[in-house]
Image (tube, rainbow, N blue to C red; front, side, top):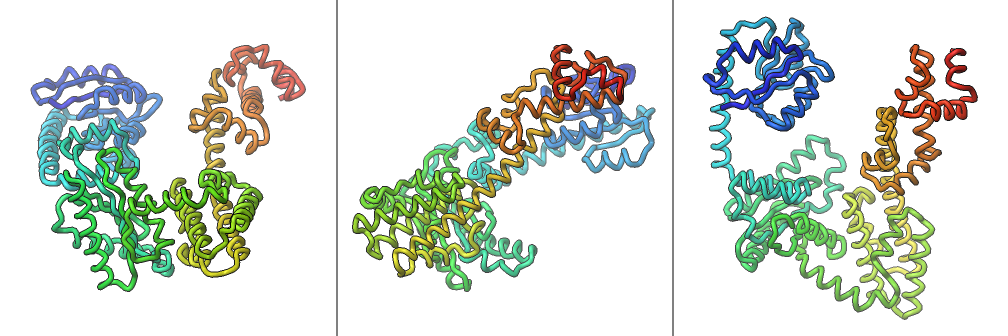
Length: 535
């Protein structure tokens, strides 16, 4: 039975439609009816119907607006639009939105019953097709799931649900390992390319990798961008899984060396045993990939080796010169250039003071700092390529033989550039948050319980932090801004309506007319009554 709802603001139309057809005989189950768009949305979210029959004109939300809202939620639902208006643009818009049919009132009942039979037939075909896709294309379903987990598009509850729906519960007991294949010097390669040429380059890159893994079992290709591709290896034995990754990595490296003028870097994570931890494995692979700026291009980089070396180096040497990664990163994120310069000056003073100013030590230390900077950018969903056109050249300059003062100055320049870049990104992000907050206030000023906390929650920020940046960006505290919005709206209402002062007080968000009058006079210099008389 197809779950069906009818939406029309005229009860007589709804009842007539529901009573004139034996719906069960046609295979339909009427699970609800609604008189307007808002009521319909609640009903649709609750029952998730297969068939929706809706009028085009209704209070609060018309039929076209309703379809735009629900289509992403129920992409496979069959929607029939009823209209009393023979206007082409209505039908055109409805068909663009993907409705099944557009019928003018009054409609022929025989035609409508034939339409119901056609929907039933197409629904049956759709179900058969969906089952066939599930049976035939398990690889695509798994690949999409792995990609969504890697890029944090799904939570653990959704992962569980999708595994159950697609009969993939057995993959939860496997080991997983993420590999990133990166085309080196990608930014230089695409410098003079058109958009289509870049897309073609990425496509060919993905195809070559796909050909190389064609006969390998349990490896899934997740197409990336910016000249990289991601492979997700799965298996029941951790050692065999790692062995397969090494074998495929060596094969890919040989293949690209023989075919390409440009090298590739291959980086992979450690093996993990939790499906929901694929995002962590991806970050490990990214962290490994960052070391290509230190180790050089054209290498295969194992996260476990890099991690062990980093831990040994940091624990043995860097505490002696008071270098702390977390402090350094927080200073860069703060956006304060003076603090960056002071911290680096202090580091290099300690290097000399402790006798660690050998070229080898400085090269190791600078390499570590450069990787920390790249990791910071990655953690903020940014890339070192966003800041520098040629990151490898920057690293080469940093670690080239030169005086310790020259190295310090170059490190300052690099760090300050990253510092400024992050600050500019923060500024843009802050402006977006404040703009979103202002829009919310301007639309909801009439809410009597509109508070600082409610607006902060709307823009997903802490109350104290939001209050601080709001005042900084707007130039006045939140409550002053809200009061001015309300008073300006009240002035408009005094000028354009015959509403009483106490009525306008309620309309702009005040439940106490006396308090409203006091505020109004304080801001404008005259009472509400005087203002209305003057205007």
